[in-house]
Length: 396
View (cartoon, rainbow, N blue to C red):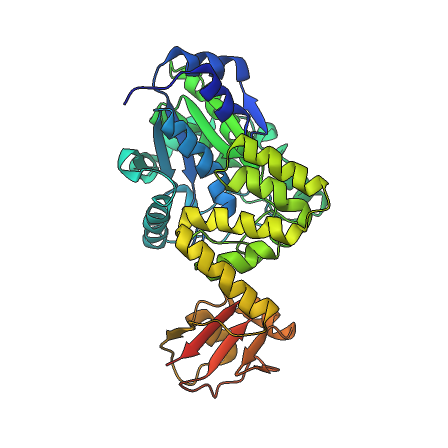
């Protein structure tokens, strides 16, 4: 595939939504040269679904792919077993190899909603780390100091709070950095929380005789709560595999101050349209109408334009006309389950803690009656379970 090195096209990719570039001058030189770059992005499969937060980076990968560059998508089949300590107040729980690989396959499947997956080089870092000897690992670790690894904010916070830091945790950035050596990465695209980890690649690549990778850093998408970064564990996420109706409802719930950033980071509207949105937000236009346009633009990417229009109609029915959805999904269920287990089985909650929170906040109804206790277990076929204002399932 021929690389598009048109200056205007390159500039558009390097400016829209980008928070920082390391090293800007070098990257522009590479992109304008017409050489096809190996653009790496790595992800540890730690949850069931990809979210719009993940998609901020994947949309940028798509833009580089459309310029003709090679996308190298790395699944952390080794590193996800113990996990990235970034922004964590305690060590992550260990995961099994089989579980990680299954989640990784699901990530790749969902990625095809955004990238031309046939042109993507899919790699797993278990390819090399599963073959590492103890000596290999120690040699790699010897290239970095303990002080350098422990200078990170979350480790400093744990030290002040007298919380444990386990030996394997400071090693993680070293492993992430070495991934770039194995993949011969020219460029990596990441969220801002991964900057420290990816910077470790540059000295390792130099030592290996490679030109150090440049880094395009994207901002972290704020979740539907308007305060924290989008995360499944916080329940403030929009999954790219969510139904069109669910996606529409969640997008309509975001605070008004997030509208522009969602347009910029999560849609494919033109720069002229972005400017129009910015002007509308500064005017007396109703933010609700702008959100409807936002929701339609995003749903078009992950579903279709027809689904977007239908979801808008459903939203009006549910919220303005106080009606239930026209087509309520029917699902099989296991009799005798309590509310928390039922919500998880129906995929209406991702964990018991989320289910318990929904019940406590009176966010769960059965046949329009609020469920007061999470240990209710007398559900039957024909019951309509409602979670929040948008999720409906009929038991069968």
